[in-house]
Length: 305
Image (cartoon, rainbow, N blue to C red; front, side):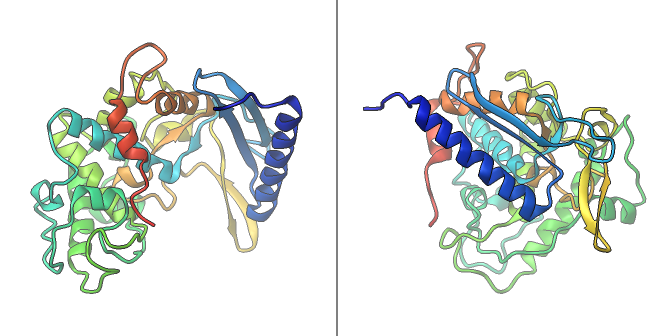
């Protein structure tokens, strides 16, 4: 049986959380962090904003400040695959090559399945990123608000050609598929391309918007790169250059070529809605359903050591 948390325990927990956040700020030289804790009713139990969204201008962070979500994107990719399994479009036990013929699986004795990529157990060693901006430059194309790269079919096809070709060229592996975990952006890139090809929408970004973001009313979230850059309430990105922390709003910086590995941007206000959904086994606050209880439990079940 569970029991209510006492006020003293809550105070101690908040104190530890804030001390931990301060430690992260110091160690990572972070300029701004947004922290929120919600319960299964969607109530925000705690929220606090550390630092600034723009340190030079001393602009504060709030619930609607857009941050790059990096690899939290992968949870949206996995959720998309699970929705498609629910709809009978695919199975997580299917071979990846059934949907991505460019990926031939030629140097592995066993098929790499969707479930292997979802659990980072395809057998691949870590690889340098194939990045968005360099790929677009080599293709001779530019991004625009009218047609962002995340929506372009030619860009997705070039990305999959590069990623699938690189994985197929591997001859040494961590083990057979499903044996060991080895973090793999490339695998989640392949998964997002499967979403694009058989999910019924023009792009991975469109699928996520229609099937996850819109039903959850996550209105300040998405996979775009240019629009967050132009949004007044978005976080400046800081990194060390020549020993100095430098800020910019280049959301392309080090972004993986296929969006399912790390293209999402979101806010504290929006992320509490996706957390509500997980805490309520697939239900939305409005009474809809993103995924079945069984599907959510399957996503959250530990699969690899």
